Image: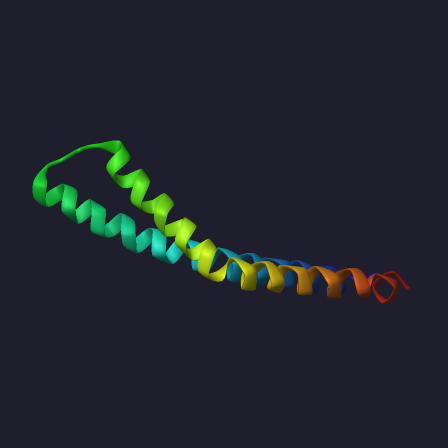
Amino acid sequence: MTPETIYTIGQDAMVMAVKLTIPLLLPTLVVGLIVAMFQAATQINEATLTFVPKVIAIAGVLLLAGHAMLQMFLDYFKDLIRDIPSLIG
C-alpha cells in the first residue's frame, strides 16, 4: 500500500464525512440563527428555546434525506471493502 493510496482513501473518507454532515448542519445553522434573532428581539434567554427547534430540524432532515444519506454511505463502504484486495496487493 503506497502513501498515495492511503492519502486517496483518507481524502475520500473526509469528502464522504462532509457530504453526510452538510445536510444536517445547514438546516440546524439556519434554525439556530432564526431562533437567536427571535431571542435578541424579544430578550427571552431560554436554553431549551434554541435546543428544541434544532432537534426538530435534524429529525426532519433525517426523515426526508436519511435513506439517501445511508445509501450513499453504504455504497462508499461497499466500494471500499470491494477494493481491499487491490489496495493490499
